[in-house]
Each structure stands twice: as structure tokens, then as C-alpha cells.
Length: 348
Image 1 (tube, rainbow, N blue to C red):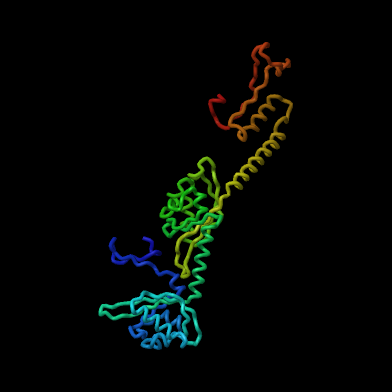
Image 2: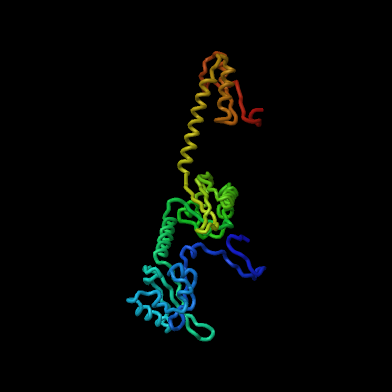
């Protein structure tokens, strides 16, 4: 079991699962306040003290409307409180709250009616700073759009290296729908890669050390395009929340197939030029025909062929005209040189 995701209580498969605390709630600093049927504060959380500035000793037992609302808003607060306590539904929205220091802060509320075992009614108010809430909402919305619209393939994996998020670009790159990624490990989802095991190893290294691995090269043929070898530049980095808790690994993937093919063609061209340059130096070092034939065969192997043979018309070697035609009968060739990259039947 991964202890970064939860703690098992009770033992065995029927034990309760207690998940680790979320950093998001800490960032929001969600406050809880409970009012009795008369609108007096009955419970006051530490987060409420941080949000409103009043300590529990100062707040408990006091009417919430008088403590937290400006005079011009008291009537509206009492009306909303009566609506919630009357069972007309919960109330949610933003409301300006008066803090202990006299300043006003816009607070996002969720208010609901509670009923205890004695039949007594209470009102629970959950509140957080609206500016902070809107800031996080914008960040989340922006992150979501960036991931969805990014021209770079993006994925997030949990601490067990199971896919939890895949953007549309990575779906196209891998030739797999998001549903074929989610819940699976790279070794299973990316079986088309020859080095899928190395991909997982890289992710585990990043997860353990926190040190990113950038621009790692990998190649393979996807299910969507099995006829073409594709190449990708992949980067891995660890994800952590605001408290430093490890959430998993993120990966970015860029298709570099075109530049990879261009680089291969350039390298191939350079090898051919080098071969021509080498041939111009090595071939024809003497006027001896046998030596020149051996030099030619040696240059060809292994860059252009596994086996090379240099055959010369017998008539040329004897100084006779080299005209070949059906009327003059079959031509006779003499093997002057043979070169092979390895032993085979062809050279025996």
C-alpha cells in the first residue's frame, strides 16, 4: 500500500481508509460556524478566528448577525437565517463580513440547517475568503484549459504510476484514447514502445528523488501508425501539493519524428560523403590491377554491402577487345577480389 495516499485503520480488507490531508483545504482555510435556533454562535472553529479575527472566547454565545454584519446588513442576515431555519433550503453566496479590526471582507458562504437527536435546530455556516476562492478557481480553470489545448502531450500519473490524466495531444501521439490510459501503468499502456520498461524506471527515479529528467529520447511505432517509426522527446518531473506531499509524476511529450528523420538523413549523407572521401584516398594507390580491385571491395564492405566481388572481363585482362554480344558467344569474367563482413556461403 502507498502510505503517501492514505493510512489504513482497522486492518484487513474491511478496515477504514483514512486519506492523507489535502493541501487545497489548507490553502482555502475553510471556516466552520454553528448557530443555535436564536442565531447565537454555538461553535467556532480556529479557521473562523483566522478569517474573521474574533477568538472563540469573544465569539461564542454572541448573535452572529451583530458580530459579523454591518448595521445596514443585519436585517438581511436575519432574513436569510430565518429562511434557512424554516427549511426553505440552504443558502449560498458571497456576503461582506465585518472583521474584528473593523475592515470588511467578502466571504463565500454555504449555510445549511442541522437537526440533532433532540429535535433542536442549528445552522451550519461554512465560509472561506472569496478572493482566495476565485483565485484558485481561475488557476484551476486556466490549468485545465492549458492542459486540454496544449500542443504538447501531457499526462499525470499517481504515486503507483497509474495514469490519472491524459490530454488530447497525448491521445493522438500514442494513438490511444484517454480511457485506454487511465488506471493503467506505462508498461501496459505503452506496450508499443521497445523501452516501455525504461520509461517506468525513469518515472520511479523522478518520484523517488524529485530530480526532473528532461528531454529523454524514445522511439517506436504506435497502434495508430504501425508503418512509421516515431520519435519523441519526453520530460518527467515530480508533482507536489502546497504542503510538499508527493502527488505523482507529470510527463510532457513532444513528437520529434520529423527532426529525427532529418537528422538520420543528414547522418546518412555524411557517411556517404565520408565513404567517397575514403575511397578517393584508398583506391588506386598502385597500378596493380589486383591491388586496386581489393581496395575497391574493401571500401564497399561493410558501409554499402555485406559482400562485394570485383569481376573483370577476361578479354580485358588479356588485352583483347571487350565487345560483348550474343554473336560472339558468352563473356568470361575473372574474379579479382572478394570482401565480406562475415563468413558466409557466398564467399566460399
